[in-house]
Length: 372
Image (cartoon, rainbow, N blue to C red; front, side, top):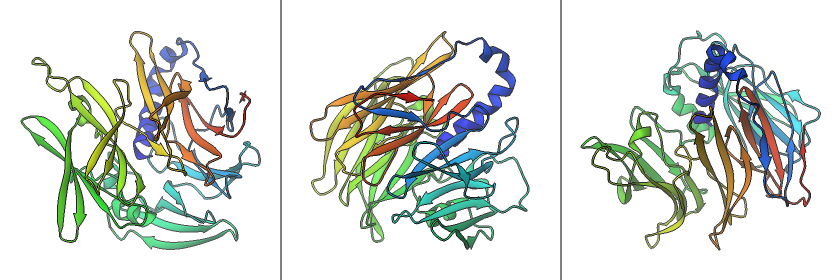
């Protein structure tokens, strides 16, 4: 979510300076492309920016963030947490302003919310690690009780994310991030290194005081300065899915071209299974595994040179058959996919020009509608 938030902040700043140019671009639309699915735009906001949705109460309600700051000088904490039913009605505020991020507990009855301390100065923050004044709150959704769990006391924001349960937030200064299996029996360390002006990611499994190297994959040099990281999604305690990059040798522009691949890694073998490859596989991938762990959702990205817009496609990959199909397309950007606990619906943020909406896809419906 952090990368998508940075994208939003950048977009809002650019809109201030390029509003006239943007007005000359034809209005873009979303295109639901799978006729067996039901698509619902639950927000369709023109003034507020809504993003980062998650399901609660067995998929009957959706939590999401609403932007509350100044578009001309947005800050990472310019959000409040809101709730809605699955159809986009009965929207109400759950927290006050100042929310950085949040995480729904597995029982879906409580939420952990990471906020900045209200008295903290609104300094110019370039990266999240610079934030030192934060608080972690527990929200009881049933009894509407708020409990302060932790204050920063000068600790880096990464410590707050560990308590939040999102410990795989990359540490850009140390050029690494750590991801753990669902029951925390396996810890994976991803380290970014540079050699001969080439960037590489090394995957290690942490075991006690030591660690075992799993494999090394290249980084796309064109995006290394933007902090590109390979995504990691765990299937079980000993296997995960990630994204690799392998360059195509070019004497003039080393590592400037190449192919992204989705692979499954089995730590017991160890072995690596290729699942999908495409030149358009999003270099900042947002991949998500459904609750049944049999389908992976990922994105393809196409930039229309000379057209002034981009197209993002949402794809579904069957992990057993390796069959992939596109289920959604938009002339804009998409956020990370999140699922209801029973797997019946999914939600994601959609960005079209200056407008952010939350789209819900009902995976059990058999008629196609795009409601506004």
